[in-house]
Figure 1 (cartoon, rainbow, N blue to C red):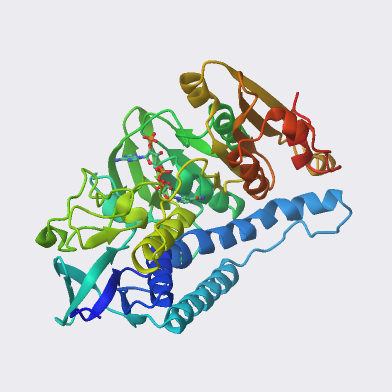
Figure 2 (cartoon, rainbow, N blue to C red):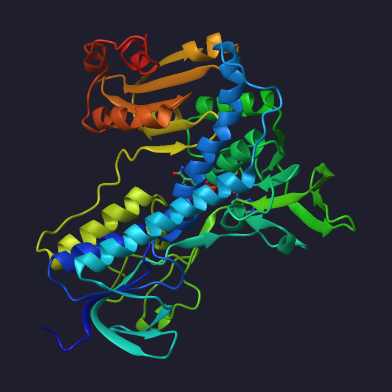
Length: 449
Ligand code: NDP
């Protein structure tokens, strides 16, 4: 037993902090976790969970249209009640928030609902001025939406506020073309808004396979979404009628009812006192850590989005688990960042694991690419002119599948299973040796020519 108040003090009860706190406590450590807002963090409170529920809600717009082709008598003027969806989603957020709180408490860790800042290598200061000491401090404070500097930026919202809107706007301009921009573009479009996506470059979803994101762009344009590329904000002006006039470089100004920034996320390290303990930050404000999640201060560690490695919930959870097992469970563990599957819950969704075709061509001597470009059976009967595209990238020498990239209905569900095979290093021949499950979309993966 050390002289410190705790063995571990975790700052931030999001995905990474919660996992680390409860696992360390289960290993017998005396743990406290401080949270300034709500237990659950970005993913549960204002990210993955409520977003996915909105995606489900929004998708009914297409499902209801398609239902007619399947014989259902759906009135032409189907009414959508935003407040109903919003209340149900926020109630589910409350339920998970409670479940997270209970899980932490049941593990024996103490929850302190206050902001905590670092005031030394082994000391934190709570918002009420109380000081607590700990043998180790874990920074798991996450990140926040970054809003570009431009005159009138205060008139815009971020994804944080999107869940609390009074009404769905008639016209929305979304800045950025990454995960959040494309996911919310789909949600707002399906719920009846006219959507304009504006990005500083010509690319959407940088990092994903080129052909897959081109397909999303084509489908989005076909659905009526507008894009403004190579555009930077010159200003947002609030007009007398409350509308927002957005001026941008290279394009005519547009007038919309709402502007939403989805231009990346920055680590929440401002004012956290990390300098008092000699914790080094990178140029984006992220805590610099080694592969054991240790910062440049020997007693301070960090996991999750605040380290800006891969900003995904399951990664934060793995990092939290590895940290707790390594330091409190006597089981040194490192997170493996290779072949992390990811998905964008756009309309339609896209997903990928492993190397894109471009990456494989840069890294491997020879590459073979197999693809299937098809109209899913359901879309055919629904008269929906939306094609799916599956790509498999293989090492030309060894036949090993090094990447799978997909766009189409339910591909995030499919990629999770396919990722096991890619991670296991299976070959194209082993995929082909698996009998197709007919009729599914996923069967294309074992029938690629
Ligand atoms: P992304 O990094 O995905 O996209 C940021 C977008 O904003 C890009 O289009 C980028 O342009 C543009 N951009 C970046 N900086 C600026 C700037 N200063 N001015 C103007 N435009 C800018 O970030 P998101 O905000 O969409 O999401 C943040 C993170 O959250 C993601 O990286 C992801 O890891 C995670 N997330 C994951 C989800 C999932 O797993 N489904 C869902 C939502 C978020 P360009 O690329 O052209 O430079």
